[in-house]
Image 1 (cartoon, rainbow, N blue to C red):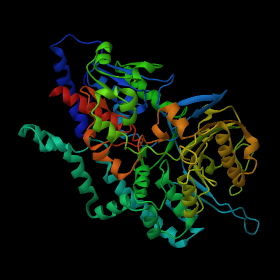
Image 2 (cartoon, rainbow, N blue to C red):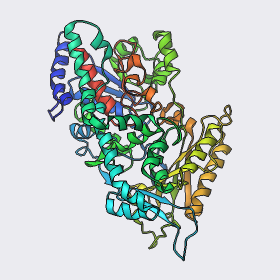
Image 3 (cartoon, rainbow, N blue to C red):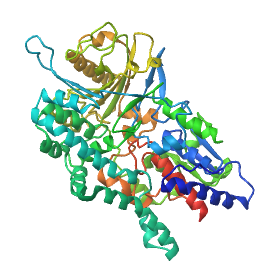
Image 4 (cartoon, helix red, strand yellow):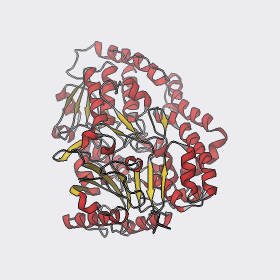
Length: 569
């Protein structure tokens, strides 16, 4: 079963690799399965779809009752359907969406325009409401909005956006291929070394695309984002709004070196051919997971849920019992080493290195069911229950200044939840009516900063969660009076909860911090950046592997190519 050709070096290679894989298995009786994928997250299911397309009989085992890893839809309260963890779509690579025919299998996306709304917490002047910043795809309107705070910034903004897009597009080739195979280039026969040289191509492509912008790229990924933004802009609301993308999901502040890369990571995606766009998936984020699962099943893969036993002490014997010689799995390397496999089967130095990976998380996700839309002082509702353009946005609260973000970070660094947390509110039911009863809405609150341990040593208790949730709701009340009375239910997920429910070690949404020491050749570790594990036949392809950080399907795509290439050898 060969994959159809659809352009791109890697995709043209898939049919040939599939033929070689079939040849490798033709000499022996066909096993029940050629490959088992352990974990039903979107990256791992993408692997299963590509392996099945490549001619390998594939099975997927998911621990929970629902597929999707962190990209799931759950009905927490009757009639209210939440994207319980992951809540926006952008970093799904276009060729994967096309290859797996995800739209055919039910994927529908709601684009957001405008996409960012930052209300000010201030007194209005002359009877006018407080100011706000509303950004979308229309540059002229963006300049008008920014001009409320700085004419100079309004003029500079289009050039800044263009500059950022150039840098983001330049690294796309690195997302769609494995890191450079350093051992392969340096060791082995001449034929094998020449074959490994092909892994350098994406790096060369990125370098050529960057061209004279290479110094700017280097500065952006290594510098604090404050240094970069201060060079471009002077108004605090604009800088703070942009800076939220440099700290989202990361235990870092805008003044921390390397925060610029996190911003770049969040603008390098695309949706419906619109660069940097983020959108809502119809039916919640489970919609993208279900479409990948349907694609895999359409090609013959089998998928099973509530298979907790498949996620522990995985070894060659268990592979043989399932009837396969290879497995792909685990979201990150901590789970791989301490849960998924027997530690005795792994080199001690590997386990030591895994234990040094940074999984720190600042995130508490709060899902809220409400009986009416929030009514913001900075943008009062016009009609009863009628959404305004700002309601479809990522709504940034407590983001009036860079110092507000720094202050929130300092609290968590000292072991306590932020007294004035950074809040990103989204209301997907404004565009997708399938998520909530008529007149009601589901609200996602992605909040920072909260430590894993309180005061450095104490676990979260229910009263701690309740106290922090009330802090968040109190701040929202300042911007949108009446919000607290509209709440009919809430679901509070602290970093330990995110770890327990979704397998996000430390509660880290990226399955490992997106810092320069944990990217590309070093993701997850320099010794296993090519998706192989220390155990023969066991591959690692979750978000903890390159390119990581929720770049949907890329690790699965790259790992599947690696498996098929190994079978050809």
